[in-house]
Image (cartoon, rainbow, N blue to C red; front, side, top):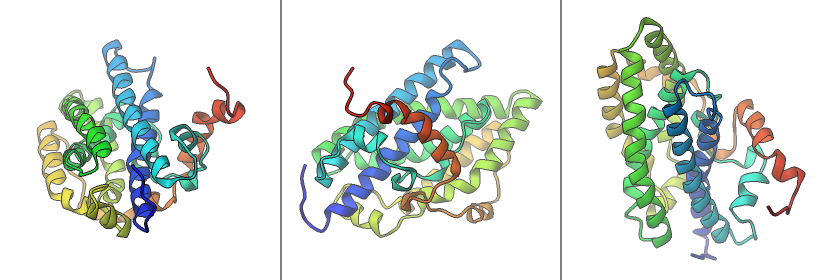
Length: 259
C-alpha cells in the first residue's frame, strides 16, 4: 500500500492512532505477566496482550510504509518519544489493581469490537485483513473483560468497591475514544479509519447493560468532560513517558541489534 498524495498524512495518522492504542494497552496488560491473581488469568491476560501487540505490529508496519520515511514497525514502536504517540490517554494509565485493569479493558474492548467490525470492511485489503482478524479477537476480549466486570461488581464487598472506584476514575477518559477530528473524518472517507462519534450510542448501550448486570453504578456522563483529551495530538500524561522509558530501553540501548 503506497500513497504519495495529500491524503497520505491523515491515513498515516489514523493508522498510528489504531496501532498506538494497541501497542500501549498491550504493554500495560503484559505487566501482569506473573502477577495475575490466578494462573489461568495470568495466561489469559498474556494472550490478550499478544493479540493487541500483533495488531499493533501490522498497523504500524502499514503506517511506516505509507509514510515513506523508512521507518518500520520497530522504529515506530521503540524510537518515538511520548509526544509522537497517538494513543488515547485511557490506555496509558497505570495498570492499577486487578479491578482497575479489567474495568479499563472492558471500556476499551467494547469500543474496539465496534471499531474493528467497521474496519474489517475497509476497501484497503491490508487494513481489512488485520481488522477482520482483530475483530474475532475483540469479540473474545470483550466477552472476557465483561464477565470480569460482572464478577467483580457483583462479587464481594471489596471487589465491588474496587470495581466501582475504577469505573468512576476511568470513566472521564472514555470521552476521548469518541472525539473525532479532521484526521478521523478524512481517514474514514477513504476507509482507513472510522468516525468514532458514530460508535458512541452502541458503545454506551453495551457498557450500560454490563454495568447494570454487575450491580455497579454508572458514572455521570458529565464527568467525561472533566479530563481534557489530547492523546491523539500527542498530549499525554506523565505515565506514558515512564512506560516508554521501560518499554524502549533495550532497543535504544542496542540500536540495530539483531537477536
